[in-house]
Length: 333
Image (cartoon, rainbow, N blue to C red; front, top):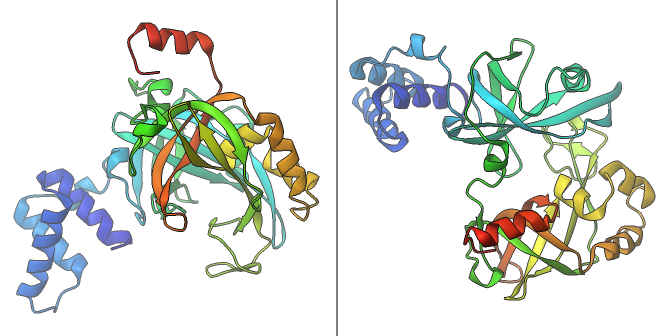
């Protein structure tokens, strides 16, 4: 379910304290009761009324990040900015575009907000920066490349500094749900933090290409949504992480790949002759071999190799003092 129906479900959940599955069941049963003569949206409105939920009132209320799903048309939320990436430029029909990713958090979760073109000035002029609490008014969500929700703000939306104080620690957010453990104990489906050394890099293609507007993968410069585009390169490197208890294939995308490589995506793309000579990237990666790092990510099953691998979300600079503190606290470091 997409768009308006998802929003209706969310508001009914908030007003009734029912689960998503329970609301969906009630709406489906209501549709059957009317022999399919009303739309799912109409059935949702009837269910809301029967449950005493005022949808008109609730459609203007704030939501928590944990309740945000792809396809929402009107999102109001308050969140803390926990990370801002470097603005990027890309070529598009009619000129040049800009994009910057802003990572948001509240007490329930985290999500990414992407700002495009003129909106990037908010970051460049210092009006949107890490540590700031903001209100997003009338935003909307799209599905990102991993199936999650990505927040965007259109012409009818607004971003403003919030007067609300959120008790959200940036460091706590970055490590949220990421459990430090030895590689040998890692299980598929876990969010993890590993401390180890990169002992090998694979000579795979270091770039794949996406639409600069929706960031979906594009074959032969054609996006199914935006037609002919100038593809945007995304940096991706992979190797083997070893912590003494075992080893695992690690895949680094975007900013995580940049941290390992020591180059921005634009720099890497130019140095490799626009991706034609990936050997330049492989040679540069050799500088990272043997260096101790801390990574955070999630473990998934690689169906091709039939073994687990870690998809790295963040590369953390190794800090001996912090590691000593964890040992002294009795944590498993």
